[in-house]
Length: 318
Length: 312
Image (cartoon, rainbow over all chains, first blue to last red; front, side, top):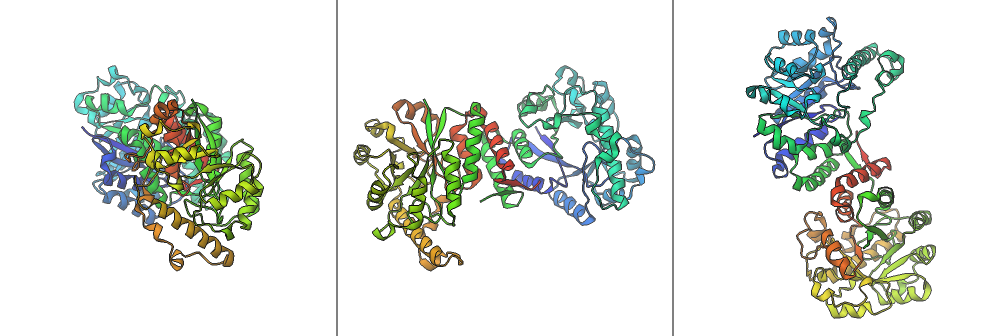
């Protein structure tokens, strides 16, 4: 049985993830049976198509090529989070995003989609990309993913409110289960009524940020100039303050023991860990919680921290 | 039953240890029944220092800061004045005497090996509690028992007697015994006493060099005293040492040592890599079911206090 993990971050977490991928390859004995990296997902800022999280910054073509090569050379796909729900006809022609898809256009890389407009455009212009149906669609009844699985998606990410509802998950046809991806470690409140609105605001924010970058302004981007789309004002979400231990108490949390004890025997094999905007220490704890054997976790953590320090990701004040 | 831990580093790990003391105070629910018995170490460039070569320099204000930070929490600072290579001419060392004067408050302590220095401290700083060092290599029960009858506050047990419960149960004054729980060294090392002597010589060379040439780096090759660095066991991690016969496991501390009447334990690591030290503190002092949270909190506090910088 395979446990194929989709891991967060291709820009800010690039070095961290590269170090982790090498450790998984070099020290397989630390890890649970069947663990594989299915993809590293994320975006290159300031891609206007990005959704799910606000990702600020700028990167040039050289960096994009370097990231793609580093992961692809290890046989690991890069999967773009192009899930902005606010895409317009004009935005599908965005030069930077199209350039990213051109640079990554091989048989390996993938795209997560949400906007129908953008999905149609990518299918037409870049037919080789494998497409993932996003969790941002908020299909929180079981009929949602079942119908989505009938479509031509490589993977369908399950809404987190369906997590651990085994009576409902049993209704997913066994032959389709290996195409279902479970978001294991969400920070969000279960049954959040603002979830879809939150993703919309993040999408608008991505558009505003992209316009700001293109404007060539030299003053810093200031969200308070965009009161209407500032999620801080609109939602007052405190969920991101939860740490890696607090989220384990949520009913939507999928534990590693459940992955190996329940989900994998049912035929599910794709698991997503969120954390694109999380800190390195949070990621360290999360990756090892899910992927290391419990009896090797402490040793694996020490080895990962050692490698992170040797590669300049962490510095110890001596 | 409370386990009293002596923890490493007053200069090298000063900030980290302060962070640890804070976490222990603020999150007692994560920890076993433990208390910090002392933070031990030496201020560089103390010529009296032994056990590990202590490089670097520090001034009087730093010494005062460290003493104040630990002492105001009620935690003693214990100096590792265990250089076995000392001669009479080193006793009036200005820096070491300055440190002793600043710390002379009845709370602080010193670990000793050299009879010369011990006598000097007893005479000039009588309020210091003295610990008999593990560097003496008293590796049989009789010599250790005799040491425990002397006027020492604590006697550190030679690591080769660790876990030899038939010998340990015969010891007098068990409350004065301190156990080095996590030694990196190979059991029954034939070079141990010589190694400590070499470290002592190197410390003297280092201190003298820094006094004469404070603007030039110290090079052990010039002094020919770098042979200690050939010992391959310095780099063992906490996971590598657990199988050594001399390693004391936390379970044994609570199930065997404490019920026998022993209560003092020493964690080595003055020159250890910080994350290995974090893992060691958590392994010995956190409750197993809270180890992950204790570690995470400790790292979080280290980050907030710039002991660790994460390149986000």
